Length: 118
Image 1 (tube, rainbow, N blue to C red):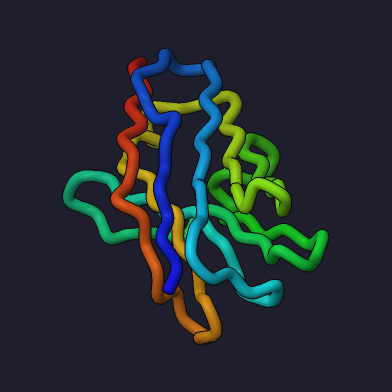
Image 2: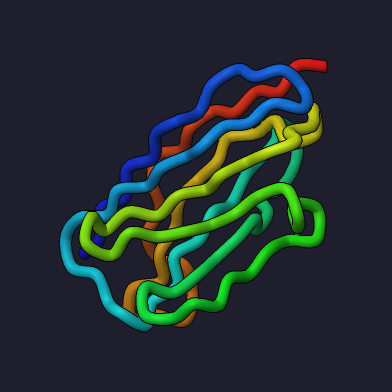
């Protein structure tokens, strides 16, 4: 069982930056994927970025490439999302997710609101 808690959301002007954090507790697995998703009002949840605890590869949605950076701190069991050059269309609830031993994202945090004003 994995518990995920996000923090770091807030209100920022377009062009600004925010850093989201996801603290993982319970059992984690080196080969599991940790990811950030987001869901804007009236839209489906969409993938933002992902990585694995044991690898250096990172994965991004095209819409955030070059602006967002996902990173991890294995010792703290934390995953971060640095968001730069924010746009109003980045406004959404951002969720941290983990696959555990599954091939799908089984574990989800409660979400943190990010609002970008124009």
